[in-house]
Amino acid sequence: MENSSYNSLTLQLEGLKVTKASKYPVFICLLIIYVFIFVANVGIVLLIWTDRSLHQPMYLLFCNLSINDIMGNSLLVPRVLSDILVPPSERLISYYECVLQAFTTHMFGTTSHTILMIMAFDRYVAICNPLRYAAIMTNNMVVKLTVSAWGVAFVLVGILLGLTIRLNRCRTMIMNPYCDNPSLFKLSCESVFINNVYGLTFTVVLLSASIGSIVLTYAKITVVCVTSKNQSLNSKALKTCSTHLCLYLIMLFSGMVPITLHRFPQYSDYRKLSAILFHVIPCSLNPVIYGVQSKEIRRFLSKLFEHRNM
Image (cartoon, rainbow, N blue to C red; front, side, top):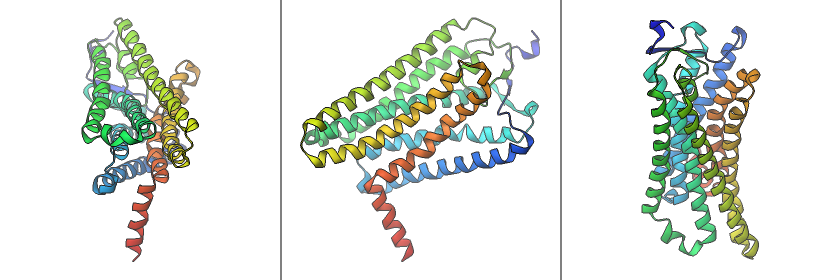
């Protein structure tokens, strides 16, 4: 072990393996996707913020998802884009930037689950207790749900990264396109047993709570819709719940693919690509799916275009 690599503050990213012929097409494609993610999600946030008719719990909670999508990609994708254009030997990153990138990456994934959980609670109240919806989903409740979604994620991810940064490092190569917790603790030659135990517990608890709450919520919503003869209620439930469930399934599937590919080292290149797609696919589809399904957003956009064409 060389002293120069012991607790080095300069790390090297492996990055994406792209050929000279595919380098620029990959760069342009990823850049277009990132610009769309940024513009679409910022547009959604500004739209909900400026239009008072959209100041409803459902849209205010969805704002959290757009903000999370912006933050989750703004620190990751520009770095991946810059690394595509430079040789592998020059893909250097400071240790502190790497830790920040890992924290942002895990916050993005964790907060995606917690936000969709509180959105499921909102749909449950709206459909199963419509007469009490206004009394339950007050502004104060929306703030509490928002703080809980971000706060729980912050604490869980903070502990996850805290256990990693305590370790001494004897390696400098990050075997990933970007920094994440496993890549960081693999730099250490010390025992990472606690990191593996907490990481596994973290994943199991998060997925169990997320999937369990979604299944329970939609089971109750289904019972209400089946037993109710109110066609208006059933139509409303179908539209709003199908949107939310679609967002959740896209996020869940995108996250499960890289986790599954971790079990197959021979597909490491596909795992690295899927890890990036986990960030960009849900974030690019969320504003599109929600915008298409939302009657209020469609009405606002149609008025906006009509006004510009006048």
